[in-house]
Image (cartoon, rainbow, N blue to C red; front, side):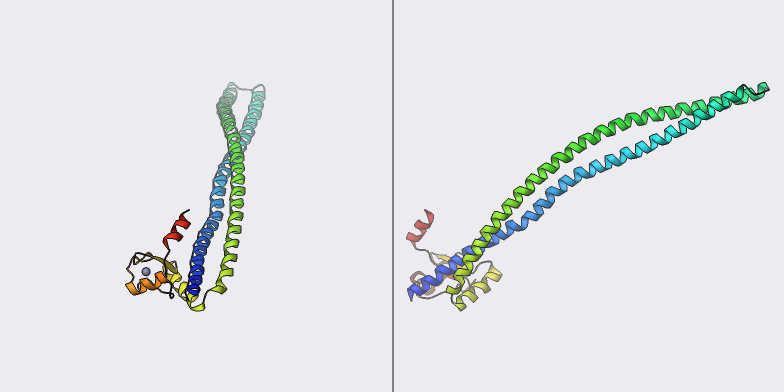
Length: 246
Ligand SMILES: [Zn+2]
């Protein structure tokens, strides 16, 4: 009887270890896509800044072309008015034309000033685009490196998970149906189906185990559960503890 109980308990303890390892591995695997997405976001924000700067540049270039067009129109009108001055008959007409030319020249100055200003700003934006382009390149390389690293980590986790799931499948047939049901039922609401008993105390819930039950656990005469938390109880012999600590 004792051997049977020992084998059952050993399998249940191993099952519990595997289940907690599987839970940790699954948690680790779940984190990977989130970590990749977060890294990708960093790289995308650099791209967004670059796109915004490019748009700003194209708006400036458009404004520049419009200003150049307007300036050309003015110069053409000034040229025509200048030509007309040689054809007018009266001084009054002449003065009117000069006044018009003067106004156009003032506006021309405004356009020229604006064009210079735009050229200066365009230079700054172009410089900014170059720096942002470098940022994007750097961020992209960092992202790809991180993504590859996370992918490799994921592959390791998947392998470890598969190994543990395989081991779990192997030990399941050796566990009595009743014990497995108890284990699964308690694990579902306690997180674990087994608990160690030490000095008449269930380490799962910290409630003391009655002397007779404690004796059964120590002697491994039958499978016992904690009357408080319902976990399947086991005791670790001093020699086993020392061996495990090695
Ligand atoms: Zn308990």
